[in-house]
Image 1: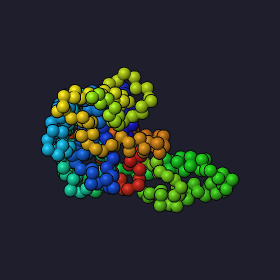
Image 2: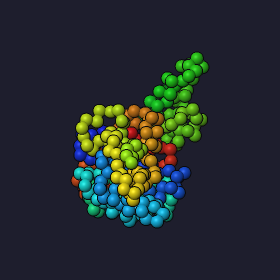
Image 3: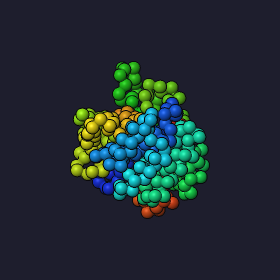
Image 4: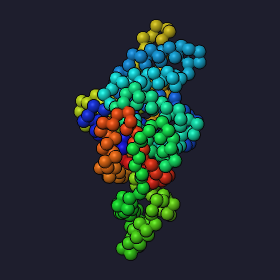
Length: 204
Length: 110
């Protein structure tokens, strides 16, 4: 979806920033680091704005010279967003964030939207984080995602066509594979079906 | 010291695509170097890295290489997407949430 928005960004006046939250990176994916990563995508496209250079120089001279605090980042982010015509922020796998960080993350996103109401936020996550989102955004648009039979069929066909041992395949086997996989899939991860040679399941 | 080689790791998008001259394209590699006038007090370093050590764009490029074209096209056809994308709803309709269990492929929507 980020690429789709980027395609559109080339034609229209909008900026896109995004981040994949990862359970394994919970410790470094603090709210400050996440919002900082959004900010650096927004400001990193041309010359770095003066207010960021100044903040950086001041920050470096402070004892310890660590990264900026969340409140400071949010001030800079609000400026960056307000200076762009429209900003899209995409965050994947909200549920993989440390639970204690989710409220702060959503509050930070809400602050940006309040300041710049045209900002659009694209989130993905397991259904349960919908409740968290609703606590901070009264009317989120919710789209349930489940694998589509068409996508799965196309993908399995593509993988079978690229099989590096085609001599082991015959029409019956191929038909069986197609039939069984499509029968078994409802809302299930394809990787659990024994098709472990599929490196990535590009369903939606 | 001319510190003109800081990491160009920002921005989504292909670096080889036809980006035209749109300033909002994420294709624009950041060639703007951060020249620190070295008067002895100004620090040398990367202000973008200071903002956050995370590198989400690397992960994005990694995922893209595994993606299957056309996946997720349906989403763009939904009224929900159009309504959200259009932005007419203002702050009240700012959030689109794609909800699904692990493995259904939320990450791989193109």
